[in-house]
Length: 330
Image 1 (cartoon, rainbow, N blue to C red):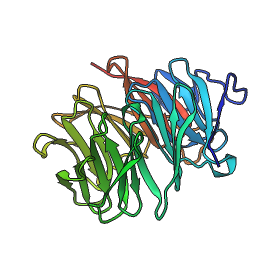
Image 2: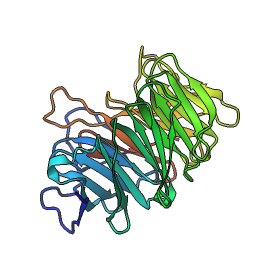
Image 3: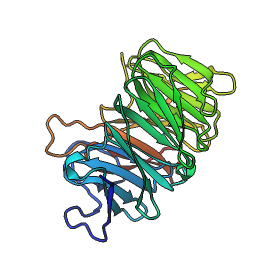
Image 4: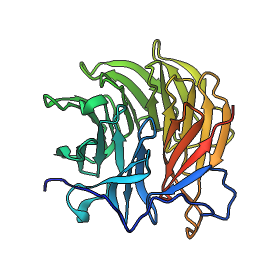
């Protein structure tokens, strides 16, 4: 069925109100906004914090304009019965959004709200997605270990088959030329999407769960399920720094470089939001996102994070259905 889209001028069930006192726990966010009345399955912030794609149980798939904190569109893959979007991405230039359930992905034009493409993936499930500027290139990581790169204008497809087990995380350069992919096979690869050739191989002692590229194309970030989270120099494939933390294991659910590649922000399934120095791996600051007041236990996954206000603040979106703003200390 063709994807549906509805422009919402009003959304009476969910008002974009600034929330205070949502939790009795100490929380030092400077602002908080509700994007789901209960909780969200997944959410993605644009690089500049202008938009958020939120997938939730009560409100389906929504695009929020965070400049006004207004609900811009409500989308659907195949009607309300099949709208469990688990991964999404927003192009760096804010022109397109990419959303995926287990078996399908959809590309949306943010200016019009209309669907550009709707594709069913066969043989294995979708694990993660990425999209380049202008929606010109799409990257899809699959449970089979295959990563598919698609050029939307021509329909050209290239399948990267370097991974031996399921892919957990993918990232794409702004121009779509380079891909970074991490898998259960303990390896992350940087590869050329035109030729499919590997540029660098990054080894880990356990399954690679999260990857990211910085906007300057100087650095890559890869993290595994145990104790290694590494920043790499893309000019030579050598390590720059390792994030320094004392926990026996530290799994990340979200990661973002700032625009000049000097800072890194990570989110975790434990409600933790952390700011790091890229060159040293030192922790600079951390916060704890708010849970839902009625949730037991009081948990929340940090789905996405973005640098805003010239790196003076962070914006987070979590499974509690809340977007929160945090001041960065100088």
